[in-house]
Image: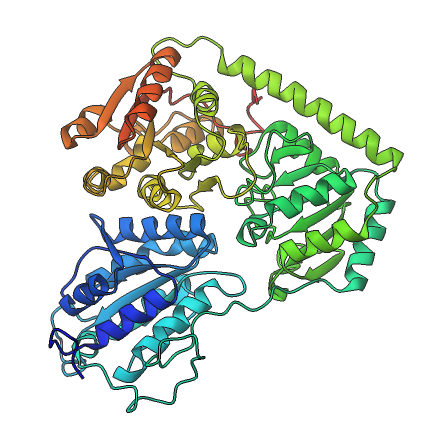
Length: 580
């Protein structure tokens, strides 16, 4: 078969068509030698977002998937490219991000003959994916790519990996009549040999499970809802908020579930766990009934498995049965979609809660949160000489950003500054954070901005240690015209380690593993052509941020901060008395 231009289509076109038919509009990559694939993607109208490394392309795709809620695709060429993709997938795995890693392999004609850059690739992906496949027949390439996309987003989402030998990508496409029998329905392309993505109906809780939760709630004195990443993956923030309002119960979230309720809502307490405010964790410890929805109750979410209290009545809700009770004993488990659970409970429970104990608890929680907010404002406005308090950075950013704008935070102290202290004002996925990978936030903010489009702005909160991983992608931001704003909290150190030596070990820091040179990242960014400023006062930061927002182009603000300032983490609570 030939196209109208007389060009013989290749299997790469089947791959591109499968991506397009499945709703993929972009592929993130660092280019390898699979030239037919680039032609096919272009011919099918799929944008190719070229980064400066495989790691950056993975992170951009990861953030794009989290914001859109749809599977995203990243490419790596055989050998080093595939190895680099695999090494960067851990964060997507931890965050249940629906990512498809599409890698080529050496030609089947030279496998196992020491071909240049040949590697056994599947084992590298085993621990960071939930499914893998290898294309061994030209007529199955499109089918398996479509299947990879479906599996990435199904159940508990996560990364998947598909290997395609480069000679199969370049082979002539197989006529539909020669291919395996098609199971596509009438709405699919006539020559497709795969079915388009069809998401199964979300699992609903049984009537008995809903009744049991209602009974436990009625008997409780100090109930809370604990919302995790599963609420956002189910697009159920509004459903959870409606449930909270119906039953009049305070809401805590995990760091991954931040945004499950607007944090200026009267029932919002904020993020609980290892990266959290003092007030949120205090309330979590006092709760006698916890309805944990869409959270695996892992170490970060539970402050190293100490929350909720061992005396609390805990009901865990998850779409995957195997996740329930894995980290602690729970009193009941419910296999259900977060949105279905919230909607079913809101219908089953009385619309005007009259429980007096719940009212007293609710008012106490509200009063304590208000007191904490006053304390935070006082710290944010406290004078600082020659540096800016991170609390001030967060407060000013909240004041100037729109409610639907996105904040992307790196791991470590950045996750705590943003997660615990920056209140999201709109329900839904407006906060993203590294699930554990240092340096994630800068390429992530680029992917998040591409997903958000022109209507919203994306801001990154990253330390100088994290920013150093991907400095070269300043060029990516400029070339792709991505108007994200990157805020570098620059203390010329890895501050978590610096503080750890002083307050965990009680010793002087080992400077050679903590300290960097004092690099002016604004000058570096300016050399690339990005709008940039370096500031060492809160007023200067405010002015620079106003200008960065007004430019509507890539921007970086290098903020001088102190490495002695400790973020709101529980790691050092036995040795320090935290402000917030």
